[in-house]
Amino acid sequence: MPQPSGFSYAQHGDGTVVITHRGRAAGTLRGGRAGKFLAEVGSGDAQLVMARWTGAYKFGNERAARNHPRNRSGRRGAG
Image 1 (tube, rainbow, N blue to C red):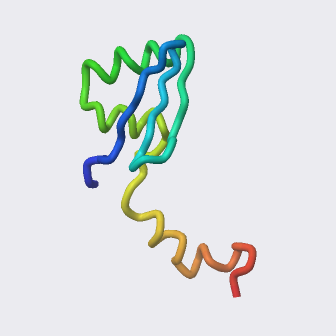
Image 2 (cartoon, one colour):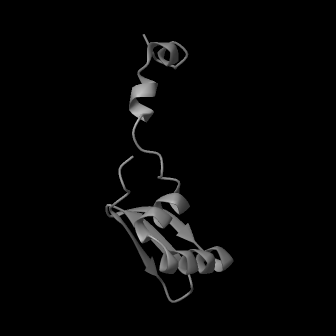
Image 3 (tube, rainbow, N blue to C red):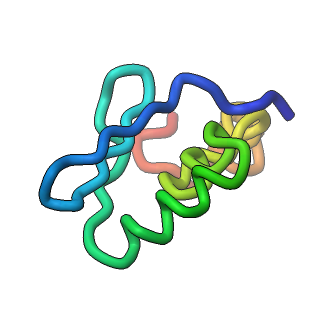
């Protein structure tokens, strides 16, 4: 599984933390959650922490699983 990359975060004056992925907003944290995030990002691998907090930690087989014949028949619009 590849390491996550492309994440960054900005802390605003009101305590809000905005996490971006490749320039697009991926999550906004406020209050206690923002504090927990800042403590965790400072003590570990920042890219991995941000990927986990935004839910963007799944990489690899999603596209292959979606296109598998077993999973195609139940989708709307699938021919």
